[in-house]
Length: 477
Image 1 (tube, rainbow, N blue to C red):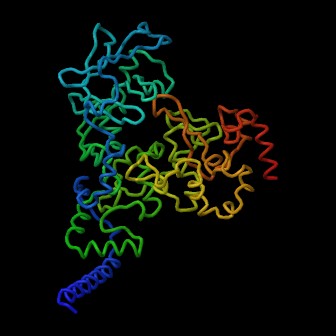
Image 2 (cartoon, rainbow, N blue to C red):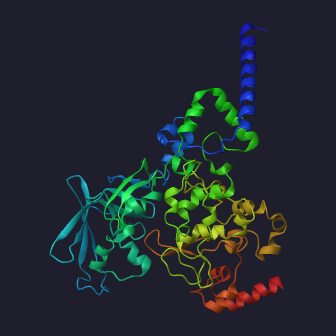
Image 3 (cartoon, rainbow, N blue to C red):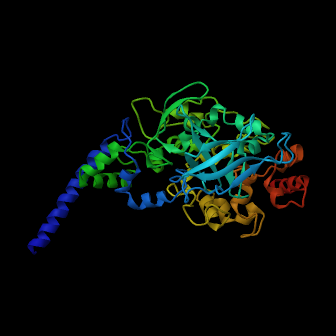
């Protein structure tokens, strides 16, 4: 054998021995044990995770909070206006009460003063969102960044008062100003915890009129979901043997790599907490301070990494009207803030290991993990069939619909569009995530379509709920 070949073989043996030795060592170590790391920022993560980092940079998560600029502002700030509707009880009904424009390089939303002539200017500090609607926030003297009352609708291409429409409340000039005096209008105190990474409220008063708030990155960055990364980064760049050992450990044991939280390798409750922290709006109804102590990963300092004990804490009170947390008259989740809760109510979550990232690409958060899995299709049916094999063997006997036709796809009956949302500035519906639910047309007979819709009549809208009830009764005996 030639010297070069001998050297190459010897090197491979040494690497293999070192790798096996390191693997044997780390499999015995408890990297899931408590640790306290520091935040390092997404740029540091991107030095190794180049492909994922590039994918994430194009995602809505990464671009959730941005400075106003021509390529980030989607609202009309070239002479935009908002007038009170003609139905408003305000004496100014039909008149312009807000203007949007650019001035000296700044983006401005100006609101008509409620007591004296003229408009008051509010410079825009950040724009929030862009896919469905865009929110605008302005800085105040005492550290609060205040949410302005008008947002831009991508559906109507106009400004609208989101919370008036969400609550069904009357639009008046006084009310627009009142919306900027609520505690939850202090965006950097209240809302930013789901829009930025490493959110810290150092100081604020009861009414959120002053605040000292900090964060590491605008947008939902790597460490918002994976936890602080300093120990992981340090460990992985220390030696190639560490990286090899972590790769082997992950592939052979399915455990997380060193000092980082990865939802795919976490226990179910911890994994779903990563998403539920922001998408489970009803979790914190009784304990608003919990999210301030939550952080993916592990900590000796008492930070919480498992929110699952609170997932079902809020009762599903039938007919609840609280905005975004509404329920139907039969107690089923209705408001968009209840989308995650509908998933938690499913047998698929409670009895199995179904995870959000099975269907939703975690690094391109509006993208599917597989083309077609987010729609009624053969792909989404195949996902369900992994568990429901008996049904998959004879699907028509279960669905009572011809294969490939509406009603033959799992989503049609088990994930109907019963979650209401105002995401784009107009009322729409999206799919419930309670995959184990079945159509209950008898609730519609009892409570009416406005109180309890059902999947059968969503499609068969020319039939009555009584007809649907009789059909289901015949099928089920």
